Length: 634
Image (cartoon, rainbow, N blue to C red; front, side, top):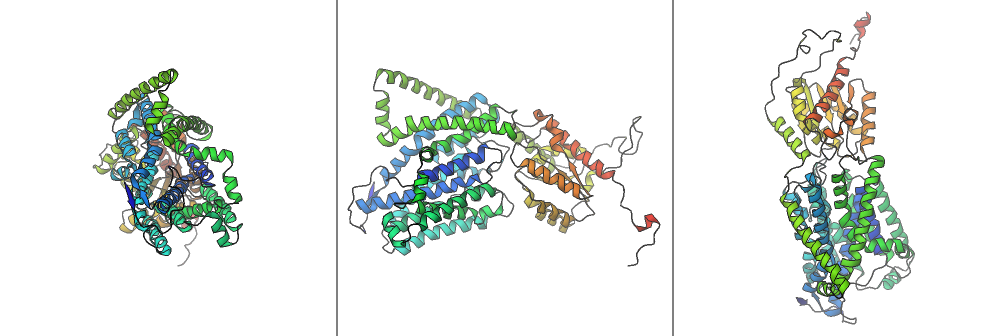
């Protein structure tokens, strides 16, 4: 389908080809983006802000696609929508199809948690709706209890939705003769998206809705489009002459790349700043980096075009597709391996080797041939000789077998992971009336076992408030049995940053009990200031138990150090050493090595009980009367 509009410029160039002319520096920026994402996912806490690579991709895509469309309209007088969409399909679908067949087959062979919700994930992948399907079913991007095999395809869905809708809007934009008005319209789209992200995201809440949403996370695409519209129809040399300072833009672009690297190193995903302008800053810095690299004699463009960066950038699509599913499959196949320290680096390294190999083969034998020659011509070339016929026959058999295994994998979906089952049991316990248990003889002052040391009385469940995340949820049956009547408020993916507000509400309502158990830190780094804020809210008269963290994540060591220091500083704070208690019994955890089943939950309760016992055995604080002194007059 071709839609023609009156051209604003005479068609003085040949018709647009199947791919836009190469833009200097963009392969290098792609390499930086995909490397950041891979390091973020595969290494234990090495690059906490590496997720920004996705937003770098968004800006590049918005810039390239908009430039392609406006150039085609300027040179041919119209935009062939059908031709554009076919090019996108030839570029994206073949590699995606190979990925789905190969990884679903491997998942079927491994079995277990990795099959959970696989049918929905495949549906989202082939319809480019992964982001909205996850939002619709409440699947959190930050949920560690469900290892989604194709979680990374949410960003591909956002881009494909952009490819479907954006050409239609460009058809309207190109008939507007006022350049400033075109730029204003697209800039308004970017601002609306960024503001929506900041407004919708609740402080301390789960950010999945704004992170996945095409409406709230499309400002990067729009900013890239603004850049493309701003420089069209100028050539890069004309831009350089217009600003008359050729060294300025490469310098600003280089500083922008350094800024992106700094953000990737310092800004974790749970920081509120990410959704209150942090990702917008990433998009703006990327746009400046693009502008600084495309000049005719830009040193930044030459640096970004170095051979290793170009090689990675050209294969960045395949690298992005493969790295996360391969990593999840390795974790599922080796459940006994920790994702921290040396074993974590080994797992990530193995996933990286497989990813690079798969992406290189896909690029050489699938993506490039189909992109340039089309599906039918590529198939004819595969079947063109005796050797190729044999190889192609094997390939067809593999595809058929993989397709069958994919269907079997989807059919074998267990519905829930072992961690999710434990969490649901905890949610059921919390929402049900607390059981009434008969106290043991030791607990009510009865005779002790010979040789046993009398213990100080522990607070009853009716004196304890516990707030936590999904680990506490999974342990809730044990907590309720061990401390009947305990008040538990635990939810999946909760961060420590949300605890002060929650405790303030409980304190204001008069429902905060005298002993507080805090089980938070599994889902991201914590700040000492948040712990001090909690203590200032509840006061020094309350006893506090902080439960440290067992999770194969890069931030857990820092979390545990902070919790231990907090407990050491205050007399009324004690550490429940869950990490050491469960260390010799990791087989009692789910495959994610985070969530306990019923036996593991009993160990969690034991760690909490030991901490409460240490608090109970503290000698009382002596006042003036205890020393025989007269009280100080008020």
